Amino acid sequence: MLTKGDAVTCKLIPKIERYETSIFSVEGDAVVLYVDDVTAGQFRKGQHIMVSTDAADYYTEVSSIEGKYVHLRWLGTEQRDFFRVDDCLTIVVKKLKAISPNKKSKIISEFGKEMSNLRSYSVDIPDETVSPVLWKMLLDIDMKLGLILDKLSLEKEGLVDAEEKEVNISASGVRLSYPCQFEKGDLVEVKMLLPSSPPVGLIVYGNVIMSAALDAGDCEVSITFINVGEDVRDEIIRYTLNRQREMLRKQRDHFYKDKGADHERK
Image 1 (cartoon, helix red, strand yellow):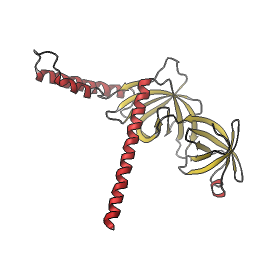
Image 2 (image 1 turned 45 degrees about the vertical axis):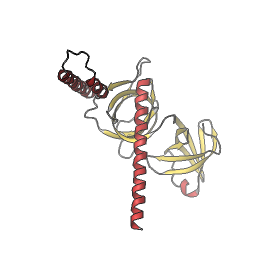
Image 3 (image 1 turned 90 degrees about the vertical axis):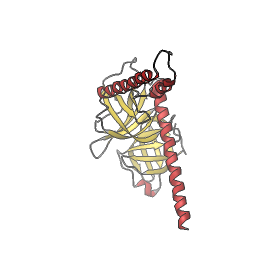
Image 4 (image 1 turned 60 degrees about the vertical axis):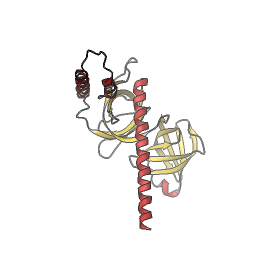
């Protein structure tokens, strides 16, 4: 929870600018920020602000501004218990009237995920009377049928022709810009294709904890996942960890490349 004196980072939605501020007071749903003269000019009444700490993101709305004091109204909180990454995903979000307690997230396509296991069986011929060539052909057919069935599953769920969106995602939720207008408290179904290797299709359900209108007619929406099964959660965690490692590796390679170029110039 936010407490007086906390140093926090504010993101002005839908802007990308971030400002370092501090918490002056917290009373119920009312939060007051203390900002410097320059930062104060960036806020306006009615604007949505994401206040971030190491533990959580707090979604708020500016209710008033008095000099260096910015008064906020708390809208919702998203815990940051898992790694979050920015990426571009094929994703479809649909508003629901209700979600059954028995409605669980699920993997809709593992897009050939078993291929590596099947390949390992190619040396394990079950019977000496079975031809190695025939066994390999049967495995190849099995793998191709699996890929075809996976593609059909993706088409059925509308993910083959769906548009890719820039997202910020973790195992606890997702944030993105979307053309459909949502309101806080809306229940949603999220279908997405994780660009892992191989890609994995998922259906998860969630609750909208923040929605802010953008200039282009879209809205920036934050969704907390609910009723997430361990298998689905594990897939998202695996994807975000691998994506983070990939980003760190690229940053490291870029650093050493620049360092090498500086050395050559000297």
